[in-house]
Structure formats: structure tokens, C-alpha cells
Length: 275
Image (cartoon, rainbow, N blue to C red; front, side, top):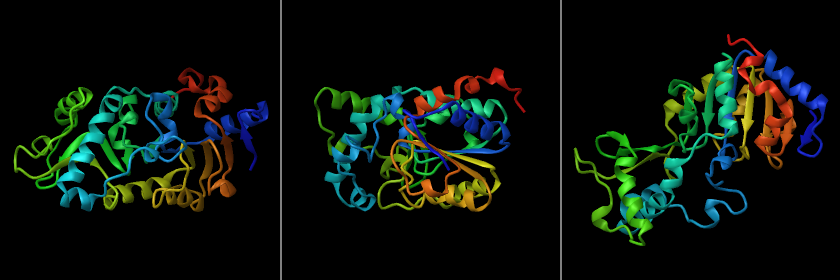
């Protein structure tokens, strides 16, 4: 495995990446926060990331504490305009291009921003391991609604310098129970059906592209390993070292934008007849 960076990318490395993509018949994109930074969505764990400025609220505390619920919704309302207005970046468009070419088996994403859906990748090809910020769900009856129904008004209040009050903490209009974004909070388990779908995709693919992920968060980071064990090639595209570099078939240490520049015209569907 050759480790290439933005400063050392070569014509030979570009050829190897393009060859792997041209040979692939079933690609799974495994994506993390780094694919969305070009869209204005901040990284969570990197330097300057969200977790350096905001202490996450655990699910159990959300249920038990009115103060924690207010804190949680204040944070969600403050970041909602950026989340709502974000548009797919180069990495998302590249994944959509793979789908247009007929070689995308699916997307397994750690992200909750909904940008793969916004890019046009069919929803039934996307496994949102950590849920989505684009919907809210009732903890009682399970009803889901667009997040804008709840967060547009809260975000406007927070933007005016107001704090979220107990009366403004969202509840379900049908059953009166608490409502939260349809994401997996700290202290919640990932949904078993999502884990099963991700595992099935990893067993069926012949190439996994791990894009913008540190490959450190478990159990999500296990999935590329499952694909590797099943015989799939593994290409890692992210800044900095990852725990899976040793098993990677191809490695790009740098930004996704620079990686796509390395590929050149591969990103155009005109270069290949969709299957």
C-alpha cells in the first residue's frame, strides 16, 4: 500500500485509484465528518471541532433533566441554520456520480447532516448509522416530522439572543411525549436494522471508499474491516493517520477536494457509460 499525500500525489497514484474505480462493480462509500466540511458543516472531533466548544448531552440526561433538555435544544437551534442550508460538497457529488455510473452499492455514513440525500443518492441506498438531523421523532409514539417544523422557530429565537424555555422544549402534538432530532444521542444504541444493512453492504461490495473518517469511532469503524475480510479493496481518503492504514489497498492523506483533483476527469459521468 502506497501512502500518498497532497504534496506527493503522482500520475501513477492517480492511475491506481482510477483503475480501482474502473474495475469496481459494487462500491460502498463509508463517510465521516470530513466529507462535509466543504459544505460548512464543522468537524466534531478534529482540532477546532464541535466537541471542543460544546459538551454533548447524554440521552439519559435529556430524559431526566429539564435543564439538559433546554441546553440540548439551544445547541441544536444554534447550528440548525447551517445544517438546513448546507449543500452537498465535492465529495457528496462524487458519490452521487458513482451512483450515476451504476457502481454504487450503497452509502454507510456516520454523518447526520443529510447531505447524501440532498445530493440525490436514493434514500434506500443510504444507511445513516447515527440518524439524521433533518427529521425529529417522538419518543412516545415514534412519529417523525421534518426538523424545520420545530427548529426554524427555535433558531429564530436563539438568533435574537433568546434562550430556550421549558415551554419551548418540543413535545409531540399527537401524544404529548418528548421530541428529539432523529439522531443517535450519546448513551443510545445504534439501530439494529441499520447495523444489519451496513453489514450486508460490506459483505456484497468489492471496493470500500472510506472518505473523511478518522476510522476511530466504534462500532462504525468496524464495517470497512468486515469488507476487507470479505475480500473487498479498501481505499482511505482522509487527513492524518487512521487505525486501518495498515490494511488499506490505497491511501490518500489529504483533503477530499485534492483527491478529486488527482482523479482528474473521472468525476464526469461522460467518461464512462452508466451500467
